[in-house]
Length: 383
Image (cartoon, rainbow, N blue to C red; front, side, top):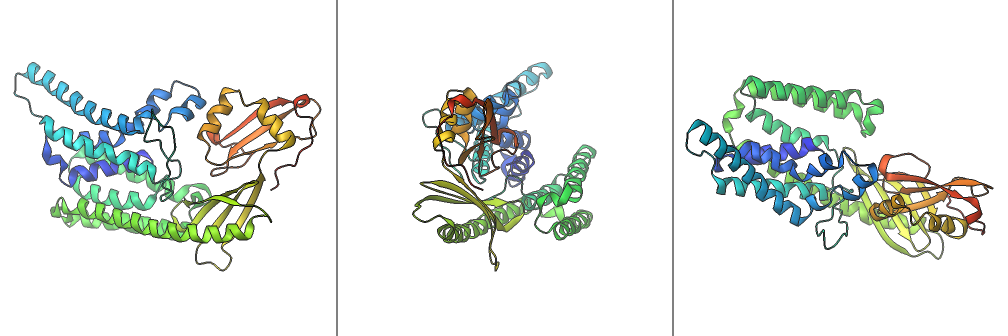
């Protein structure tokens, strides 16, 4: 999930009662909820393939989460010890309280990341298997509204806090209102109208001292978040059933389906991106639940054979290929020019995000290959 969501979860957890465990617990909860993403900072000085290989790696695994949960309270304790000596005052932080708050807040991070289709590897360094929840899109404006509303009502007292919320409100509203083509939102003007209405309602509630309800507000928000996830889980199960039905209709004669997934789309619980794999090909299609024409934009890519297989073998020792194939959930491949005479491109893509020949950051890869290495005949990926 995005770091705004992680921060709001940490802040809501603190305001629900964790802040009472120790002075500094609120700040610690927000930092702890984001702590596993420290790998982004460390990987900022590497190339994109090292980033792809290591992001959501050891810091998101069980061993990394436990380490970070212990390290953060130790840092807070060390800072407080230093300040207490300089100012000759007793310690203020309660280490046990900070430790409990840190464990709870840090644990929310891998859980939130599991809920989307990027996934994580919880058993590193012993097992590199990826796990995917496929429940929530990586950015969810509904979660922003739910948790942001609760946190806003309880943390808008000082001038600094008001300034921070103004920045968050303005930036998020600009993203919702002015992203080209509605940011792929399913009903952009409806969602934009709802967003503005809720913002106005929050200002009214703030002025009526609604915040006097205290910790009951974030607790209610967290309960509603769990209900929202539960509802998405139910809808996801229905989407998987429908996706399997459509996959049976879509597959070619004689193919056997090995796996089917339904992945969430931005702010649309009824719209799902579906991918399924057979012994001969990989397919992708868009699914709309409770629609007379549920399937749209279907594509099919055959598994590599002949020239494609030889080209893939030719680049198999390349570091970028190894990293990409280790990450990709549904890797597909095609040749840019199968009838080349000198050199062509091997185009790889992770079908859950994009297709071969379409540039999409770390989710696609193009490498040159010598045409003399791919002389055999082959059947080509069909679209």
